[in-house]
Length: 210
Image (tube, rainbow, N blue to C red; front, side, top):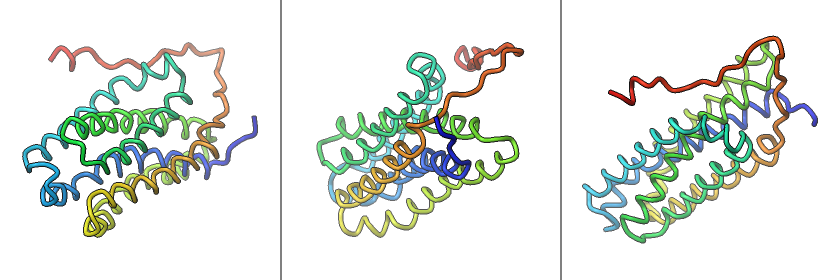
């Protein structure tokens, strides 16, 4: 399998953070006034939908590692990209609180998993001397997503809630398609060292007991 450049790996990781946090999380907040004004939801319902999204991030972060042990990295990333993009299209439909709640929960789960799985997948496949450069590309995605959510999304909201979500979905489709077909779907296997014992990372039990 041909090597993938550090730049491409960094950009693909950046797409994971841009979609997983920048759009899946932060694009919703500036749309709350538009959702309420358009009569899609009450202010209380809109706030609860935001909380449901945060619950999804907690679930996704807690289960991401286990998911990769069951299905491996590439299938998990493929599913996360597809569901996150699908959620943006789904939010363009005014089909009620339950519909929105399902998709806001789903994109929270997949958004968190995309970051938890996608970022290490990109960084672990670049040489040590390129990690700082690749990391800068990866985490630029978060800033770009938040910046777009705070500037472009309020402007798009003037054209309607549905139009805004469709525009975001189309952008997300293009980014996710490039990231998958150019990089993430072609990730080379990691070289495993036979001289060191590998122990899977586990979440500490104390927070769950507390």
